[in-house]
Image 1 (tube, rainbow, N blue to C red):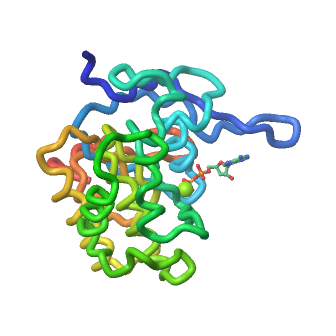
Image 2 (cartoon, protein in one colour):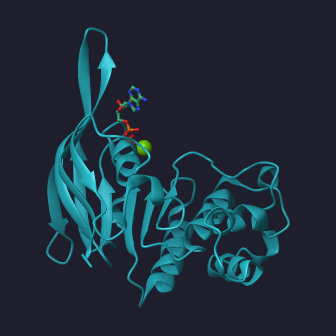
Length: 225
Ligand SMILES: Nc1ncnc2c1ncn2[C@@H]1O[C@H](COP(=O)(O)OP(=O)(O)O)[C@@H](O)[C@H]1O
Ligand SMILES: [Mg+2]
C-alpha cells in the first residue's frame, strides 16, 4: 500500500470574480506522507483554508488533481480517515461536549467503546470537567480544544487543523500543541496545521508557505524557517 496519504499535482481552485476568475490556490504540487508534521503559513486570505478543504476532499479542484493513494476516494475520507478542524466554531450547539466529541465515531459507525474513546480524547486536552457542558457555555479557546478532541477521537490518518490556536493565548496554544504532539507520538498520523503564529509553525518539521494561492516555499525547520 502506498505511503502517500495526499498527492496534489498542479492543484488549483478558482472563483469567479466580476468578469474574470481569481485563483485562490494556484498550481500546488505536493505530497503528504504518514507521520509528516507540516505548518501551513501565510497571510489572511492567502488560501490556507481553501487548500485544507481541498486536502480533506470537501472542496473540488478547478484544475489539476488531488488524490489520496493510501486512503481511497474523496467521499470516504471524512470523518474517519481525515479529521478537519474548521477555522470557524464548528461544535453542534444542541449537543454536549461529550456528544460533539463522539460524533465522528457515530458517523463512521466505529466499533470502538465510544464512551471510553471520548473520555480519553477529552483527557488528552484536559477537558474532563467540561464533558456535560453545552458549546454556548464554553470560551472560544475551550471550543477550540473540544474541536481538537473531536479530531483525534477516531485515530484518523490525517489531521488538518485550521488555525487551531487562533483563539488561544500563546502559552495555551503551545500547551494544546504539546498535548497533540504527545498524543500522536508513535502513531502514523500526519498533521497539517494552518497558523499565523511563527512560534507554532516552528514546532512543525516542515513549513509550507502560501502567498496569494501559490505555495512558494517548503522549508525544513531543522535547517531554518
Ligand atoms: N466561496 C468563495 N467564493 C469566493 N471567494 C472565496 C471563497 N472562499 C474563499 N474565497 C477567497 O479566497 C481567498 C483565500 O481564502 P482562504 O482560503 O479562506 O484564505 P486564508 O485561510 O489563508 O485566510 C480569499 O480572498 C477569499 O476571499
Ligand atoms: Mg483561513
